[in-house]
Image (cartoon, rainbow, N blue to C red):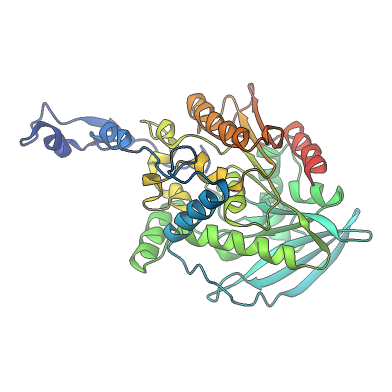
Length: 385
């Protein structure tokens, strides 16, 4: 999710709910104009969110049993088929040599409904190699998906857009190519709506998500499910050391990275750049999430009745995890990041695994993944993988 979504803030009058708390009919004096939009009784709704399934609050005291219960609840609320057994049936093509690694396209079945094309990079040399499931961001830019992170050697028409994105957010680098050059197998796929699976437009997201709900499913649930399936595909490749697979992402890709670590045991570590916060601290007037639209890719109906964002990420404990945040990031208020970090720290501490959790804030940076930040991630990956 990016702060550059092409829609302005609006004020909404949603005062009818005031009657719920006054015992009568709402009057004009009771109605509230709320920026966001949020209902005027949003504070009461937030107060009811106690996240009772979170580790430490849940009555389940055995951590492994808690992980199973928490993961099962998340999987239930994805609203997708949890027993997906469709063969991946990969088809490889578009092979090309680069500086220190081989590039190829792979098309596979993440679900029984659709074939998905992705970029697969393999270092030169003798494997098996450590691997990275690389997850692209949102950014309200849909014509490129995997191309935001892997240089599109297969499509000259997307090259300029991809380079522009890399220049804007990644110091001109293609993160996937950097990882491959440094010895990692890299898999990067388009989420539904991006690249080969799009392009969607910004204002079509709500309708797409609503239609998923009408079909008894979920856009966010599909994305989470596909990412977990992609981790399984990567682990099954002969060229990959299945014990050394990380999920890495920026912005919405960061959300997807820690979410995949929570849902898939194939992920041995995760690095999430610029997406971690407490839900309550994010749900404040003016926050980008309240615009709707792009939030649907990260919105699992009913989940906040049980778990906060850091609680979901904690399902991956005590595996190594790195969270990088920008101190000037307008999407994630500092108090939300602090609350989330405190929750994460408490979980890893309870597992006597504090050294496996790194929480870093770059105070002078916003919503970006610059070269120095990338270097921190690359060095950390070398350590944990």
